[in-house]
Length: 282
Image (tube, rainbow, N blue to C red; front, side, top):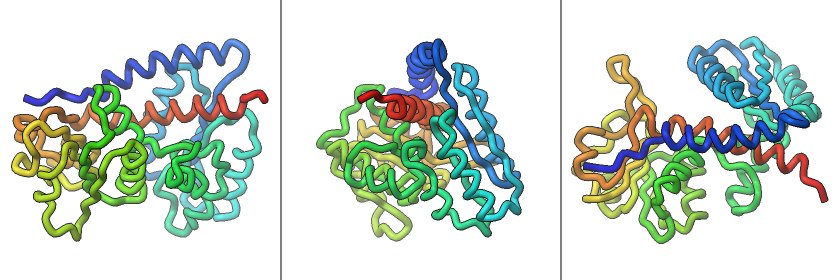
């Protein structure tokens, strides 16, 4: 049976370390995360509230800016500019999706790269591409941190990424390359998904297709990381047929409790990095 890559346990350990650092900051200063949400999308609101609860529990000040769905482009951009100028705010997360009438790229590119914690704007995307200092997106970062937390090396490994979204799949592939992995990215037009997976040491799925990864696609002893989020019969599940794949994989992350808890953990890691950069003394 595969080793379980428990993201909840790793997250709790890392959060303990971050809490100690935040307590140190709060002795003489404060640290603040701002989250901007436009409209009343229930899943977005739930995500923002969950982030708020976790942040507040370890001493982070949280500012939620909730705007109406019919907010104008001008008003939303004004909000972002004000957050850029607010020295009390160390990091900003713009919750997606934005209303359909909003030009998303204009909004995220207006956000200062120094406060862009989830690598939403072009400034941090270029830094990711060039492997220079900047913020990496939280979900891919959490996946890589989960592997490292369990001592799984990426250097020289054949890694198959299933999914090419701009939010997870593409940045994850770049981050894996920066870790010296040999990366294959598969997608809906890939001719032989099973064949590509069977060449891999590590399989990472982020497609949003329940049951996509089956046991016959996984080499004996391979590592399987499931970033998928799906609901089947009202229950949360990933992209991987967990019960079957667990019997052949060397290590596997569950859904829930695998990569999910690591996303907000990486948001807080990036917030602390933003604070330190903003308070760096020459």
